[in-house]
Amino acid sequence: DVKVTQSSRYLVKRTGEKVFLECVQDMDHENMFWYRQDPGLGLRLIYFSYDVKMKEKGDIPEGYSVSREKKERFSLILESASTNQTSMYLCASSLFTSGSKNIQYFGAGTRLSVL
Amino acid sequence: DQQVKQNSPSLSVQEGRISILNCDYTNSMFDYFLWYKKYPAEGPTFLISISSIKDKNEDGRFTVFLNKSAKHLSLHIVPSQPGDSAVYFCAAYSGAGSYQLTFGKGTKLSVIP
Image (cartoon, rainbow over all chains, first blue to last red; front, side, top):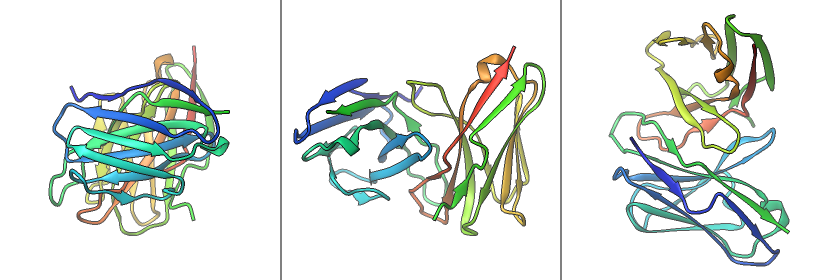
């Protein structure tokens, strides 16, 4: 079974703090993704990475950055947390197979509250 | 502009009956579609998928139908069970080499015992 592990289930941070959300997958997947889920808005892609040290912006990258130093680990960084970044954050991973579409496997999520 | 639309935010169905969840899309480049199921406080889990070269895919109680001309797909759950109560997301890939899944906003299904 694919396992995507997010380091924290719940986080409470103060406005202006630097926040790190960590994600690890154990299936040697090339692709990793960070989404946020908000009520009525579904899942929106923040950033994704298709290889170590490679990253691409998703639909809502503003206020976020990412780091992928190792294949199995993908970190989401909130440089200066703001209250509008209170949300459920979901990490996902998938294989890359040329010409095919691959299932994304999700972690359990981190519910972040910024006060 | 929302490219994947799930126009029903919620749906209630009696246990044992059929649940039909609908999804419309606007991007004609979408060629692979997935349904995910999400329980509260958990990540989405993959349920079933369909390629644009097919019009139906079945897996146990779950069947997905694709109508390309109408840009519409639907997920049928028969028979519905209380454990099916969850939020269901429709998602789509576009084109070869695409990494990005586009998700709908989700439909909350409640199966009433």
